[in-house]
Length: 339
Image (tube, rainbow, N blue to C red; front, side):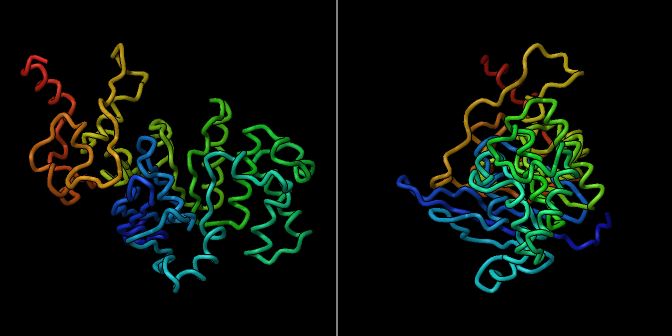
């Protein structure tokens, strides 16, 4: 991929807020990322860090009490937000940009057959007749590895297993041959064997169709295996982005280092896995400075102010002490203090 290639998707300074009785929840705070044609971007972080909300904002799925309050989302340079972008966005979402949701059982319509649900987007975006959409839906079910695809067309979601429902979701997502596929933890609640099959299917479809993929996941092993770049989210912000090899070999942000050290490996010699003490901060009235400071072992006074500009070797890191071995230094500090 050429460095001069214009990105398909640009998320620029995105902010998403949710109104609650306790106050305004700043779920997404100045998130920026880009996705180029044919690449796979891994979006990782703890639950509640804002990964899924970011994807939903791209797909136009934020509804009251939530709202996009700042920034922009651009597809091939054209904004998808605001009144001017609304009509364009309807033509792009579902056709050029598609999404696989985390739980297919709650995402699929229980009152519609599999065939009707897959065909709906093709009838809307491609102008297919019912017969054309049904024929194409059968081909897609075969392409994603479902047995007896003709029979599956007339079944309802509750008649299928979890792995089969996820394959139906993938068939729906690729029905209009999108350029970007957002996969929101597509293997959640599936057993290990089915997880591997779904990931292998996504990799095959990407190669065959030239898809770009945003993969939202907790599994760093999956990110290392199939992603080109990774963006690490914490408390509604991107704290580090870069290519996979750079971040896995030389992570710059203490949070990224903590995530990697808490992941088991075949070469590991530790008896127990490291954990990151504490919990993520509340996103109501967030404090200035680095949101990871209360959990960081090497925080300094500057961290209480605005985060620094993103800069660190081959990746972009929002940390005043980018590159320092946070957890080794933190352990040394604790020993010196007699803790």
